[in-house]
Length: 85
Image (cartoon, rainbow, N blue to C red; front, side):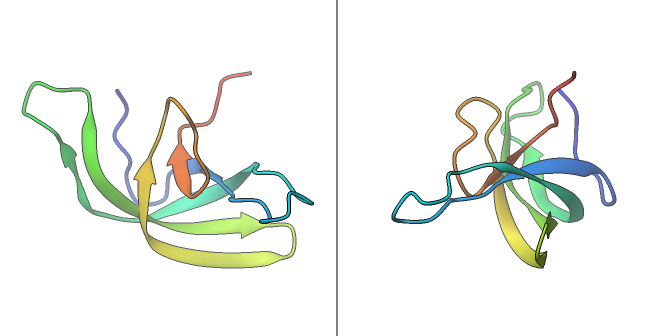
């Protein structure tokens, strides 16, 4: 499993709008902090904690210091590694 480091590009999953006018979607983000990201156990590929992100949107940027990783469900408000295409 990859480990995030400051400066890496990841995908942030937006929440979308409450009324559903805009759905949840992936946005490019840059990792700004990894101080609270660590393996769940020494031999484990599963990680706990969060990273800080600078999220790049078409209309501007926002900064979030506490974003959890979600490689499986890719829920709104989480980050994951970019898919290979």
